[in-house]
Image 1 (cartoon, rainbow, N blue to C red):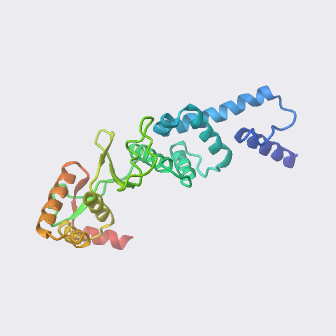
Image 2: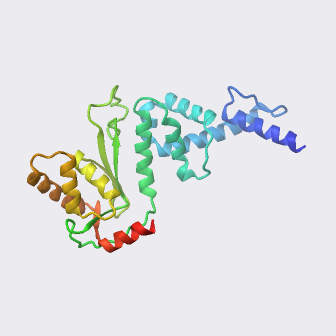
Image 3: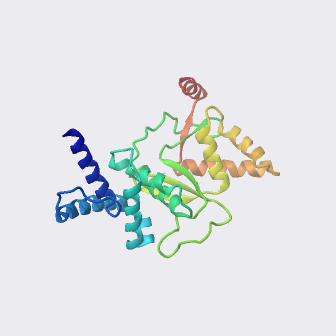
Length: 254
């Protein structure tokens, strides 16, 4: 009996996931099976549509439903949490060509940032951003894409990526709203360095970036870097600074 029950349950689930390839278990009226098929598919489609509205609108109803049907039939999810299920869709799409995988990542990043419960690190909001160690907000995410994902939609579906990468900043404000803006290559690289930083001051980071960029006019590069740090701080992307002792303790703890 347990083996027979397991076989029936497996056949039942396989049919709900991919009715075109797997017949329903014997002895179940198709009218009843159709109710379950509709419930499963509509539940998944509604969840993904709420997570990826731009993809749904861009592809159109038929292509979108075919994509969801393929996902249901071929993917084996590893999480039971609805709030994390979008990650499964992003991972499944990652092997595809074109802008679709990056657009999925971008849309899910917006949702993930909106619901993030990250802890704000200790910092001095009045600290000297040059003399101290810059602290980035956990609710400001620099992202890089080959495709202009923030512009893709039903009326803008590029055939090829542009020559330069698309550098974006996702930022959640105090009210919980998520905003997107473009970043210059310098701003993106600076935020990368701050995210990876464990003990260098803002001044040291700017000098390192000038060397990395092979800047021919270091004073001008330095002035632009200072202005950028101040602007990032004013926008809440940088929270302030932490003292060297605190950064060293965090490094040792890791």
